[in-house]
Image 1 (tube, rainbow, N blue to C red):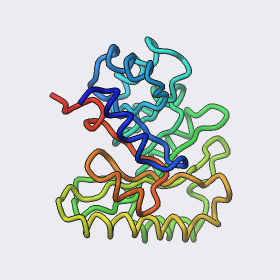
Image 2: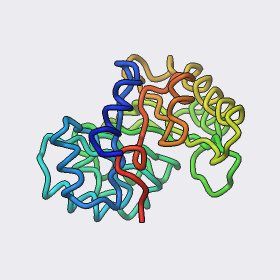
Image 3: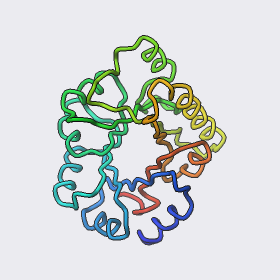
Image 4: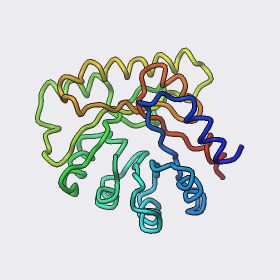
Length: 215
């Protein structure tokens, strides 16, 4: 399947309120340029140095998404060029981003929903406790736009559905705390984005289904 066919297949299958982020990590600039020529503007990168290099060599109307686990010492690299930082998985990372954010930095809080200990994120209970206490997420230059989570890597669709449903429930429960700008629920990747959309996702991150498998 070509890049054009991959993009068209997904765009024709998702509701108008769902954002498609093309995960371009490890892919060369020429491949991103091809997707850009087809109308894609949202691209996801998980390596700060690679993100910076690509942002410096590609059109400035691209909306770059910093995805994946971000080390605190790399916060200063991604804040100036990221439209959205997807994986704020600790208070310490939030604080590091706050130090380097400009006027307003949009972020998502990562919630651990998978049955896999190697995935990052707050537990739902821990995040609710932080909100109940207050004070940890009050930076004036960071706007929390929503939540993100990654389901277990499994063929068990019922389990994936249950994990996404739990994240949606948390999103709905805490939305009043953040107000109308709390509008993004990021869940779903190449293997499970259809389930994610059924469970209320407003943003999916798709790489291999667009660009093919990575080396």
